[in-house]
Length: 163
Ligand code: SME
Image (cartoon, rainbow, N blue to C red; front, side, top):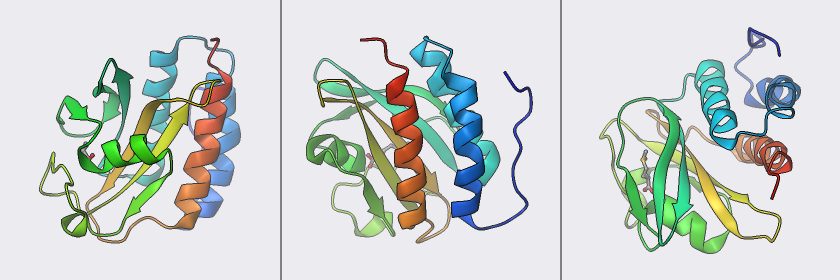
């Protein structure tokens, strides 16, 4: 496993994801412990982009429960009918929120969070078993490049699930 992350010196998210994807694959593909992989993915995204908050909410019984993350402390439990995370869970689609104040039901874990993207993670049966939540302290910070890059990264994660 590489000990340091290489981050291209550019502000173009697309280019950064291209570099990160092969590095993340190297980091997680031979590790079967999901929590370890979630922790490293959160660290990679935080270090590479400096996002305000990056983390996972994992489906446990009838709620989404806080998993590995990087950033300030956050709410621990989200009902399926609440927040951007709950919306992503229900629709099984990536959700980009350019302005969190305009998303009905957005859960504000921090008033510093201004925009957000949430990406579903699937098991082999097609069920959503967790979501990746990335928050920015800038408005409109996420584009289709982020959607594409993060979805590809979540596909790499899904390949590591043993069941
Ligand atoms: N904003 C999320 C809640 C999680 S925190 O942002 C870390 C939501 O509305 O689901």
